[in-house]
Image (cartoon, rainbow, N blue to C red; front, side, top):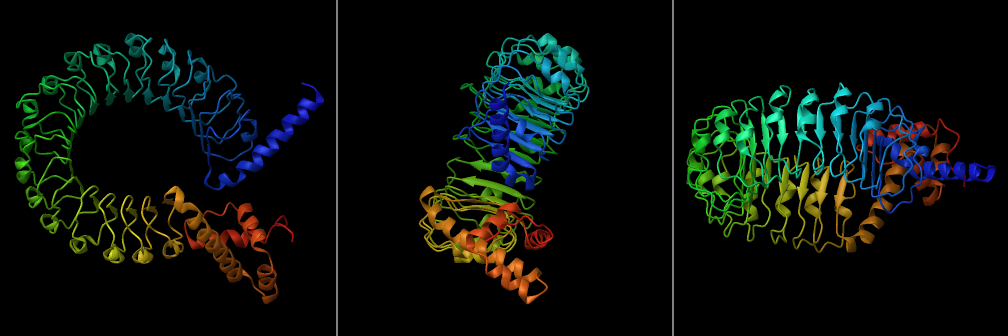
Length: 507
């Protein structure tokens, strides 16, 4: 490399460092396909814990960093990852690349989670040398042989989606394996699952399941997911093998063609069920399932939810698609903290007053205009009001605990009511609303900076010095500090530290 190339490389690294320095406050960096990326060297000196890079092609994997613990490199057309020196890396996601070998991963000894799905890997046997490996995702790699997994005995979670798996008998020797995902394997022989008696979680989404006889042998299984079953000839006795199962805690049968759940009340420890999108389902047996904590009953063509009246221990409820939504059967659910009620028109908002203790609420696509009742929901942490007809959001001003707010696709022109919400970590608004919202946030950010600076200054002279700074300079000061705080205390503390430094901008 000549002197000019050296200088170009140095300038590139300096430019990249300057671009991403403001991300380091949270020790996370996300680089997407819209950003030019040649080399990762500029990150070598960064104190970053999580690094996520998506759809950036022709990357040089020349990263040497001892602080990175999680690395995500999706869809980057990588053929190898030679050049990494990441001694403390624990989690790596290399999905959707062009990898054909896992040899370079063996140089990262502390790996606990490896995702090499959707590559071209034929031999995974040497992963047995990663002594700390617990979770492995090799979905979409159809060339490898299942026999190779016999030697990787340390894993507890295995994901084998869309891998053309027919027989999993070889996994019977994996006594540490607890969670197995075999979704999207149409030709799977379910009898081969019977010997996996140590499993506690089994996912079989988008498969062609004729019966659940294998369940009689899985005596440790606590969670079963058979959602989106492709078999259209499910009988009324489909769930019968689950009868009196005293271990199963969670059952997902979303969109699985079932129409009879009479056996479910016989499961004494069942706490969570998802029976959504089974259009011909008789939900009457739900009445006696009083031990349930969580339930999803979305898009079932229900006329009412009276069958839930006796389920007073419910903590989380998902309901969608009610013709005439009457919430009265839920009024006695004192434990209810998470209520997801999207796609329900003609809601009587006064009924919502019975749920003021909620932590999460989803009322998206409910044709709402008036949200005045929400001013009383002082405990709310997450609120989704997307796809409504809301104009005025003043009631949200009192929701001081919010850290997530979705207002996409409404008719809002004034966002000032929510701009004092320092705790909100994520706003979600429509593209056409962004200019209005950003102008208010910009103005509000200046007020916060000014207030914090004034509060911490000991003398009037220093206060005057701060107020004399232009708006642009104040924003630059915020940039130096990576100003993106979760609370007011962090804001004032960090701005105070600024004035122990000598490198803030001059006028």
